[in-house]
Every structure is written in structure tokens, then in C-alpha cells.
Image: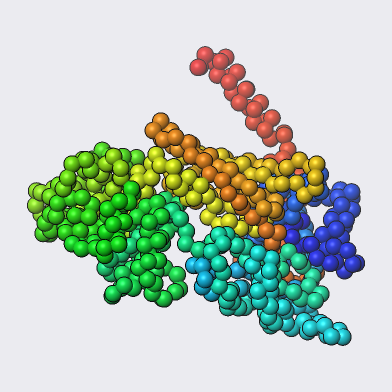
Length: 612
């Protein structure tokens, strides 16, 4: 039995199709058949009531092979066959024993929301653009209009913000197996923090309710913390650095590119509306990590004040003159190309770069600083050492400055974006380098503990999907989920998960039942001797949504398809007509007992003739 949620529709007798199929299979089991629920591991009849429905799978062939391993002589697959024709052909072609396929169910009237695409964060006071992806299905022959009811050829799409309907429109029902994208615009919202937006379809006679609504949670207003990149001149670096730094550190990233005059362009997203310097200043002051890119000799006055006092900065200057904003004496540009020199010097970033091959990285453009401009800023510590191509000359390429009131990562070279643009080891070095820089900048600080150190990739997931988690540091994450009881006096439901995460990478936690779960996470860093555990908390919504009916049932398949086992000698893919007779030899104990007896006799014979 393919125990998919696609069985949770009305059956021919008026009840649920799942109940009708299970009753029929229980009757077959009482007649001697063995019932298995197909999944990662086939489960037996006794677990039928306790195992929840699962997403439809096209990997049925491996499950059939596992049934053969436990002695099945032939298999009848009962499934709604909401899979592709290629998947069915693969199952038939790989069947190792005689297989009979029984299709249950039929096309129904249904409309569903496949996806709701909206930004994760939006500015306050601005309209929000997004799109809704719809799918649908009709039974053969369509549905007649009854009285004043709307036609089955159209549905009503309803958008809500925190439970309040903000838009309702009529949309044509997509054809089975296709999707329709509907652009939507949400009205401007006040700076109110997190809001829940949902898209729901209404279709009279809809036969499956689990795909009618999708939700999305987004933040309205300027965020606090995170990574803010301010680019003072155009370059490839922000395009590569910001998403990788955001992913590697687990912090939300925002970027701004300086235009002419007092105008700034937000980086990323679909908006090309320039903003004023005041908006950039407000966002920059609250940044957990400030990235100053493309700085030369002078900065805008308001930005210079922020750079001079910000406690955690990553400097990527456009030339040696830009080093003055990091507290260095302006240096000189060095001619030629510069390659990373191995081995790397020991530094706080060494654990992030250990075991990574640095040979073959694209060259950089280097420049030398004149040293710290004043006392008390801390002594620079080299992270990368560069060697001139064709010359026996070395210089530092990236340094850390740990002062009493601020930490700085200062690049003494340009062109790191070439590493990030490539795939393979170069991109791995780029990611690891900035992941280590972000971790070092925020190490030992109290900011950002609940915003980015540990957190889910998405705050809304479907009930059959694992939640995806990301941490700024490598280590073991212990998650505890709790759900408030629906009735007074009931105990709160809770679940726990333990994940092993790598810095900037994603780890999956097993699916949870539907509900709004409060989560608490504790990260035990991999280098526990030098880093304290970090805690975070938040909310994860698991929506009761399934796309089990997104793929329509296969058409033109006979009610029962009998497939005989294949023979390796059959020409042109023909099926052999003979099926295995009797019990498979591998399931009998006699061959194994005979083998053991022969080994014992051989040992006795060797002892009698004096052999060892």
C-alpha cells in the first residue's frame, strides 16, 4: 500500500478512499496476504493504524526490493499512482519479481496553493509585491454549475495579513498537471515586527482541503543586528560576499551601494528605488557586523562617524588610502599579482581554514599599510600571507585587529571575489574565510544570540517536511519544541532533536506535527574548550499543508496491471513467462547447515592427518 495523503479523498462508496482501501487490504490479510506500508522501510499490518500518511514517493522500486529480501514471491502494489509516467515505467522495469499494480481513486475537483513567494523582510510604509503559485484538477467531464454557485472553472484567491483579509479575487482554475502564477500586492504596513501572511483558495466542492492554504511570516520595518554592507564604489565583491557572508554567519544581510549625490541603492531584491542617506545611517548604526567596502581617502561625514565608533567592522578598502579608516597609516599599492602563501600563519581563523587546500587560488592585488596610526588599537595579526608571483617577496593579505573597544578584520588586498565566483576549493576557502571572520568578530558578545547564531532557515514549513536549521558555529545543536495544549488541563506537547551542524551549512530536523511551536536551541561549539554554549529561541510554524494532489493520477492505466519478472536473457526487454516456483533457496536453513557441516568435516579431516 502506497500510504500517501492522496488517499484522504472521497471514495466510490462515499467514505474516505483511505478507509475503503484499508478495509479491503485487511480482508486480504485475513486471507493470508501480507500487508506492508511502503516507505523508507516497509512496515507491517500491525502498524497501519499508528503510522501517519506520508508524502507520495516515486522511490517505490527500492521498497519492492526490500520486500523481496524478506521472502516475497510476488507483490501487489495498491496506489493512486499520482506519479509521473517515467516513475511508473521505472517501477515496472526494475521489478525483480512478478508485480501487479492496482490503481485506486480518480481525478477529483480540487484547487491548491503550491507556494507563496514574499520577501522575508520589507520596509515599513511600502507596498509589498509577491506571487502565489496555484494548481488544480477537475474530474472527467467537469462539474456543472448549480444555482448561483460559481463555475468550477474558477476559484477565489484570498490574501490575509494577521487574519485580516486584504485582497480577494477570482482566478481561473489551472489545468491538471500545470501551475498558474498570480502576482499580488500587499498594502503598506506599519513598523510592527513580524506579520503572518496567508494565501487561501476557495472552490465549491473542493475535494481535498490540505492544500488550500499556504502561510508566510515576514518582518516589517528596519531590522536590528545582522550584517550590513556599505559599498562606496561599484565592484563585484558585494554581489559575491553578501550572500555568502549571510549564509556563513547565519545573520541576515543588507547591502547599500552609493550612487551620485545623497542617493543609495539597496542591494538585492527587486526594488530599484534609491533611498536617502538617513535610512542607510539608521540601519548601519544597529548592525552587528559592518562591512565597509570600496573605501578610499574620504567618507561621507555621517558614515565616517559610524565607522570610527562601530565595535565590529570588516574593511575591504579599494586601495591603501582606505586603510586610514581602519586606524592604519596610508600605505602603498604593490605591483604584480599575489598568491596565497602556504602554510597559513596561526590565527583565530585557523580552525575554519584547517585542511582546506589553498593552492591554485586566483591571484589578488595587494597593498601594504604603514602600520597602526595610534596606540591602543591593538596589534595586527596576519591571517593570510601573500607571495608575489615571480618574486621572493611576501606581505600580509588579511589581518585581525583586536582592540580594547572594537574588533576589526582588515583586508590588505583586493579581488577576493574571484575566489567566491568559482566552484570547488576556491569557493570553499572563500566561505570558510568569511565564516571565520564573522565568528571572530562576534565572539564573546551578547548581541545576536537570538538573532542568527542559531535559527531555522524558514519560519514556516509543511507538516511532512523537515525543518532546516543553520548555525553560525560548528557543533551540536539541541532543539526542544513545545506546543501549548488546546484544552485547559492538558499537558503541553514537546519534542526534542539533536543535530550536528557545520558553520554556515544547513542541517535537517525530523518533521513535526502541525502547530505553532516554540523552540529553544542550545549550541555546543565544536571547539568547546574555547567557546561557551550559545542559546536561542523563537517560533516555528508547521502548517497542515500537503501537495499530494499536485500531480494528477496517471490516465490510461488499466485497473490492474500485471507485470511478470524480467529475465536477463530476454531479448529487446521482453518479459520471461516463468515465475519463481516455491520458496527462494536463500530463505531455507538447509543450505547454510550443509555449509557449516562441510567446514566442520574439513577441519576434522585436517586434524586427523596432522595438518594445522
